[in-house]
Image 1: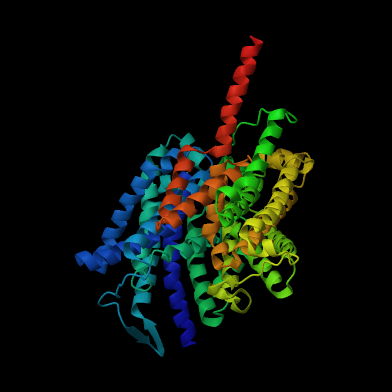
Image 2: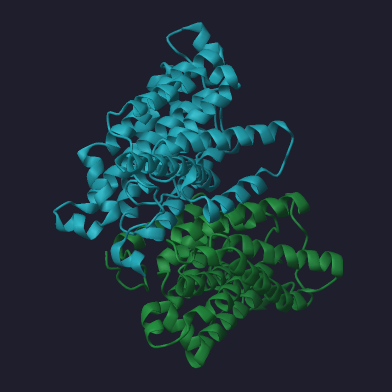
Length: 289
Length: 339
């Protein structure tokens, strides 16, 4: 039983990384109609930047948690202004391919600059060690990562439901044509939303930095699991992205614990089942095919 | 989203060809293409020439889906790599002549393509790309786990090139090229035949207006699955020849970067042009070979940049752009002769 709780916690912590990133992917897709293939690379950049900040400027975890998302926001704005913008009028396929090319460039650039062996990063002071509740030993950092990502997801959720900007983003996500028809300038929000989505991926990267190996390739598998997450949750749904993120994190953790040989396959089996039973995803609306 | 309404991928297709179906220029081009295929190993290192043809057929298989059915598969590495392993295993354990092993690999790809296609065609547009990508990754993990069969990270090494005990083909990559090329051209011919058949016409209808195709009584999903399976077979044929040529099958062939690279080759060649795949493969494979031999390490930087640039600036690709130029010239001349 105590092991089960540990696995659950690990799953929720990993799920937090997926949920944050999937949330970013979902708002970008909602407002721009772009599936950002470079989301995994942005997650990797978030982790790499925090490691570099620590090693070269002695900037610690807590500052990185604030600074890296701001830097990634800037990166996202540049990416949207310089590249993604020119293909928005075309089929989403082209931005998918564009961001795929960008992924190759980012991964290779990091590999050339920092090698393949991985950058060091330590669990920040105060979050190390274990805490014992009853007879269960739990990693403090996993609890922190899990709580932090839930707080951010809830915060973003509140911002989306309780503020005017959030309302516009939500409306643009779920019914872009109708939002435009009501006289709202959806185009104005395109760049900030893209930057915001990238910043969320960067934030997930910072959170992952102390527990994962920081390499150029760390985003490669991440992005594909992330695609499975949004297929399971339904890409048009913000709630779906978050719930499916945590769900996939849990499934992955239980898989690693109880069936290590099949751990990574289980996620895709889950995706296959969802596609079979509910093609539009758990929280997606039916498509008109 | 219009994509959700019609479920189609709205790609930038080049203008249709203006050449008459039995016109002389067509035969000239066909003969020219065959001449290039025959002379290629004289100009460049034969294994590289073989790679170009393999990647060309691989790209054609992707174009059959993307350009002619309107489905972007981002998981074709599953069929290329799946066949590479299967071909390698058949050739190693049964010692059959390699074309038989390659056919076995292609059939294997078609067999695994059916369930993947069945599930994937339930989603359309960009979702289809994501679902196929995820299934291909699943196969990658399976191959990685099944070490006893696939050799895990070491790959499948020393695949024999047996060919009816004909020594030159088995030992000399120059002679091997011609047998391999015959297999590849068989695949290209098959793709051409599919595109220009009544079945291919239905696929184009599914691409352009799935709702109307459905209204006319065509089972759109079944046509998509069939196209997917045929395409997987062609990708498998290419992957099998590739594995025999290198005498090696590795996890690299199943990676999502391979799926991405073949889409790059297809777009560079020109979506919906069929022949463009061979042109795109010629450029990408020889460029990679040049970069690798010159000791340049960041190949990803170059391929990534090419990808970004062609998507931004060169969406009709090599063949598509050529076709558009030819079309403008021919139409211009026709107008002038009329006046």
